[in-house]
Image 1 (cartoon, rainbow, N blue to C red):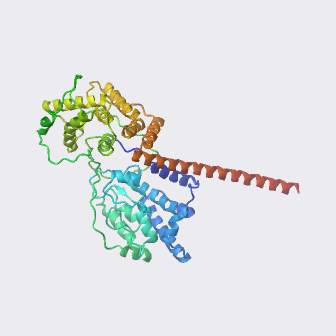
Image 2: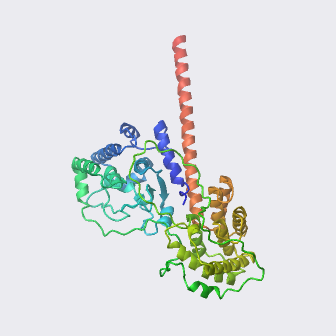
Image 3: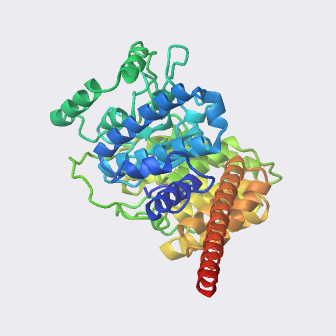
Length: 499
């Protein structure tokens, strides 16, 4: 399965970092910028120790100055940007240890990808998290990190202000401890020794803060793997791929009058992956740390289509035709999807019996009849099978073309699910050439038609663009002031010479 597309937070995080490296002012301004440069942020674990020391000093200075008030400081954009920048940096360091790019999620993406998390909408420390590793890696640590939590604890933790980790357990007392606990090789004794040694040398303030969190809440078990299907299987399917209820249900489907020739098996024994390409990454991770590799399980169905199945089930779009045929077809196809979801290999490597293939063909014919009658849900599900190479079209190239055309037809009927899927096809170049402008257009169409995810993405994108515009304006103003200052100096020199 391809990597997830870049989010607005990914662009903002990269913009913050590049501006910091170039010495440009970060949009909105940032507190303690000079002190951050003095910390020598070289993307090493040791640099996190220097940041923790800075945070402790900031805490002491605020307490001495009588401005140590969490609510007041979180309203100050400079302090918020300071904390967000440190979060972006910590995520960058952690992801590099995993030889990955940091991938940032806002609360909307987090709720979609990790529904088990109990997120508080107005909690500043929970509104963003970074994905740094593989969901199915052989490790007990969830590959998701909320770096604002240890930053907040470091700055504001006290007897009356206990921080609770959204993932359960206690919040780490600093970024170095939090990141070290999530390294790929947790059995590295040398690293653990360094961590303990560092913690023992912390200031009395930090030790007091840590002791306040010795009691942990009951941990919540989080499932980190993406669901392969929105249907939950109630029983196991025998190893020989025989599930008897397929033929029972399929017998109730009336064959459409317009016969369609099926010239190839729906499930091929030869591996063939769909073309899921993502836009190029922003930057290349330099000097990766070599760690032991772990086995990564690939879900049987690409996320692009598992999400479509979820939306077909959860987002209701009124249909005026083909409802009966669609429902009958789904009874059979859902059984196949439940079985496929339980497998440990890609769906195009699964082999079914002739009877099961015949039952699936019959269901697809009913699905096609519903689509031809104008049922947009049937169009989308039929498009999925065509794009996966499991549909009614024999030639691979024609199958992809047919799948895209079904999606376009459903999108033209103002089905927000189809418009969102079409935007993904354009963004990722699946079945059609990649076209960012067309992807953005259909994303906006889906948002206008009430698709919640699309609306949130459009809103986040607009916010990101506003930040970029503000940054450019500030940089332009700085250049103007520099030119004006230079002109004043020249005039002053001329006056001195003349006088």
